[in-house]
Length: 195
Image (cartoon, rainbow, N blue to C red; front, side):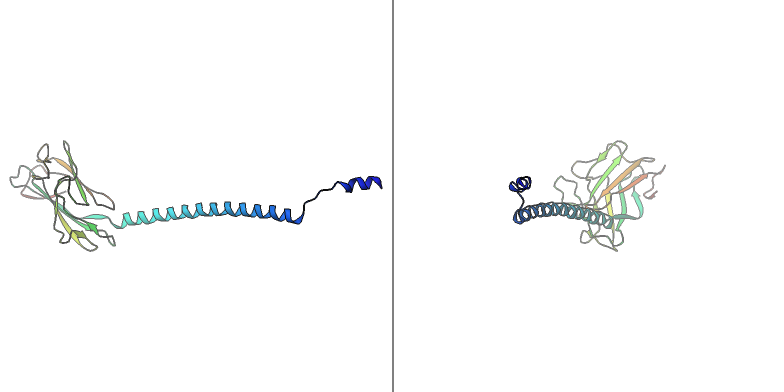
């Protein structure tokens, strides 16, 4: 009997209250971690959604070349003017085509760069025939580049003569960049369709 009394005399146990406190602590910690993981997942999903919407906005607001690129030469020796039409892609957002005066303080949103074998000119002067400077769905606009006046002292290092290549890069505020690459024919006419 004495042996049995020794076993039961020094027993310490956990009460129901202590068990409940430990259980509540574990549940609280699990809830905090669960909330953190859930918040991170929702944030990640939201970032993915924003990326998709930005990509759609870029695709919806693309400019497209509409028709030919026309070159004009008053003396049939040097190219003086380049004309081309652009349109908004089907269902695209309106594109701001405020013309550029070629100065550093220009307020245009659409930038046109001009490149030849010896010259790179950024944000050159150009004009448009858009009445409200906004190219909306279903509209077309004619862009005119006067090579004799590219704005703010910008000029070509060499005149564009026969067999000369040039590159025009049109960068709207949103959407894809249009690149127009042409080579002048062996003999210049006053008005030419540049292929």
